[in-house]
Length: 129
Image 1 (cartoon, rainbow, N blue to C red):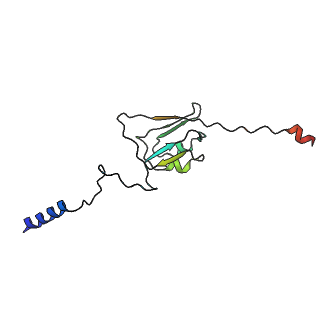
Image 2 (cartoon, helix red, strand yellow; image 1 turned 135 degrees about the vertical axis):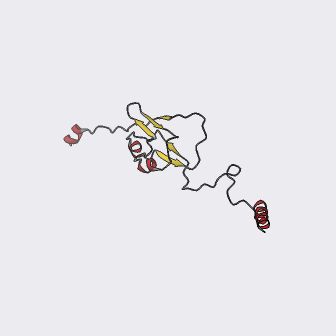
Image 3 (spheres, helix red, strand yellow; image 1 turned 90 degrees about the vertical axis):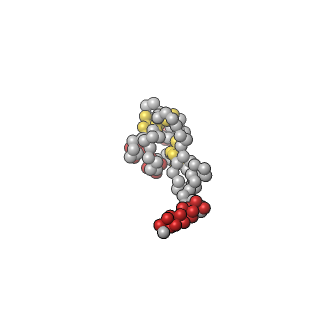
């Protein structure tokens, strides 16, 4: 009797729709809450280093002198901590996954942000009025 029960289960499994997703053959569903990888915008970064301090995996390195921002994608745990704490909003979380790589390495970005210069106040003109 056990043989018939097992055969019934096997046939039902073969003929029905799979219970799991067919990920390699069909793309996975992505929502706004999906976390793929961190995206960096060097034109907005003020090199404050808060993202580096808040990263629990220590995957980010900010160098003010060299004006570089580095991320080790193999160390990053995609926790969104750096994105939440960035005061300049130069980091964002993309929903697409990072493309596979065959060589372990660190991605280095150049910070191109230029601090706006305020024009000096004209003290002589303001005092004479």
